[in-house]
Image (cartoon, rainbow, N blue to C red; front, side):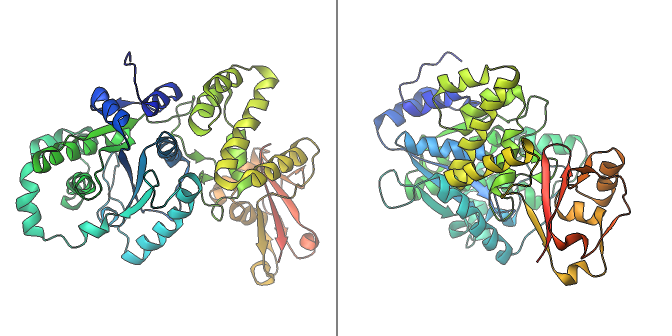
Length: 416
């Protein structure tokens, strides 16, 4: 990529590794250089929290605002009722309106940490596409919007083609998703002057559809920009840990566990993640990422502290680092470890150690917990745990017990 941008935003996107593709570099660069540009990213409300896989594009919106743009977070109150089929092997489970609204409330908590919302020229807007999708007249929509879409072209998009090539069912409901997303861009342009849609590279086809529709219906020139699909150096998709999704809401994943996820970054990914997930100067990210041996561990602690501070605050990051030092360097318990609190009713006459490992989030299933014990990967109060049949009773829980999976994942269990 040899393009030399004039605008600060595209410069940041390029030097920090955020940019996969753009529909028109020159046109977008000129628009950004002329004044405040509104831009959006859409988020379907499929869970009560966003996860680490969303964080790259949240940082894109944050940088967009810092560079003088007006970010729009578009909640998919309407599109969630259909479900995005992009690169999925099956249909998403359909949620009712109450579940969708509850999920949106949970997601809002995260955006408030990264963006400034308000009435100012560059203050962020939070919108919900149910506002214009819920009351669409089906026949009018088919006549006015549907006529601009070629089924042949829609079938050629990789997100749909890959599903059909595997002979997996694609419902008519899902097939409509890309039309609805395109219509979102048209409505955002019509209502708010939105000139740019951003998203992951898997959204390229949907973004191009929206640009084409807006040109045809409103004769407006608008743009699309995508971020790369982010994988770790060992090829895994970003956002998953051994315990499942790395949620951004503190009530679904503790700040300590979030901090620990970043502290466990592989050496090869440290520099890249510093550029993408922190606001440290690029030269500092390059310098820290180039460290080797035991020195790279200090770079990982800086990464964990910076990312956790942005989401949960500097105090939470300091507490997490202190707990990590207590647990790993001194063999202690630490004040900030994830804690499972059992009631007397939960405990009854006793609970199996396998159940406690699962309930603590250290294993995804009883089978996984038993394998962890069999392979000498589990510890109880820092001592090897070898008995998968152990029952934990009230006497054992007279004081909290510490469970460990491997060297880096720990949890406390206590009686409430």
